[in-house]
Image (cartoon, rainbow over all chains, first blue to last red; front, top):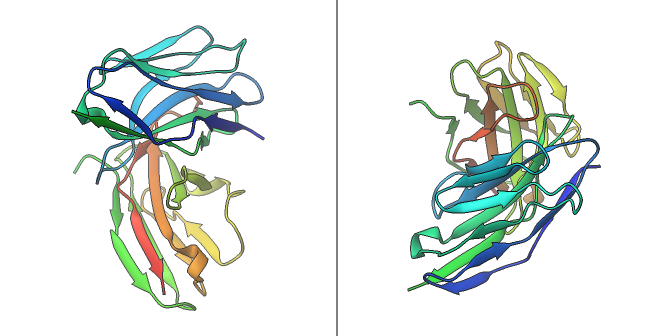
Length: 111
Length: 115
């Protein structure tokens, strides 16, 4: 079945450092890919998405590119802030319409 | 409010009891999903409704779990004979678009603790 694998955390960075969180997937067909974020004490919210190969999703300085050849959707940000501290989930939505999540990566940004 | 609403936000119960968790989706969203999230893990799919019918219930762990959506809006997740292993945050989400490209909007969850 469909699955998502993302890098284990926690990831601890200093403010203004470069961020990469790796995500790879296994799916039948051509799924849509998502990054969701869960800030402390809040619900899951969509960060960005890409619906076809080579699409780049972007929001709040975060970017991820849908790479079909490597089945990856790595999350990047050039300069993180303390307010980016959260749990980040990579997810895919395929032919079954349900969203399949990775295990999540905790990001801690220190000032 | 405009978002997905879940009640109760917290529920503590004893092993063996019956529990109901309610979800009120965003108005007009025809698709409704239930997920379960255990500590340190990603959300795990339970069941998906399209309108009033369960389109996919393959994630329900056993027959103690059941969900309904009788009028195609509010949904209730029902857990019978609760076990300590059922303790988790139960998330509800809704979606406007039927296809795979659409975003799911999540509620803040119902935290269930089974003592």
